[in-house]
Image 1: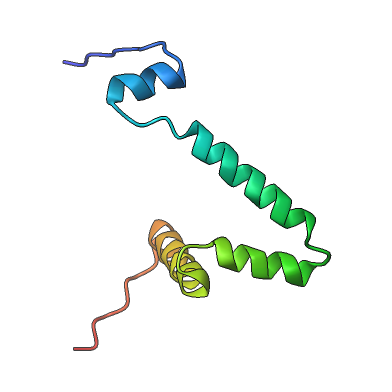
Image 2: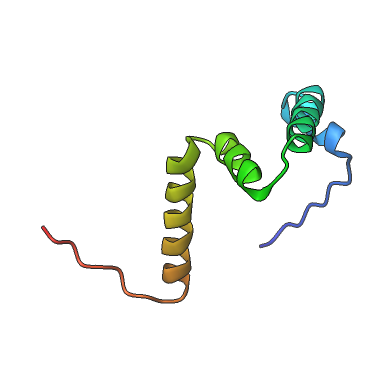
Length: 86
């Protein structure tokens, strides 16, 4: 038996119903800070340094994310998992 329930509500109503906090003010502050910081970037190198600073754990986090995405893509494509060397 399948039951399909459709709820029509705004994001604010859903957030309130689920008990999640309203992060609108924090998000607005973050967006303004990023926009102001990017205004000072004069070339690509400055933008790359800025992006590295925003990423969780900096460069290590970006590398971990890249590895995760490559592994997921290989799995989805049906690539064989490498054998354990132990």
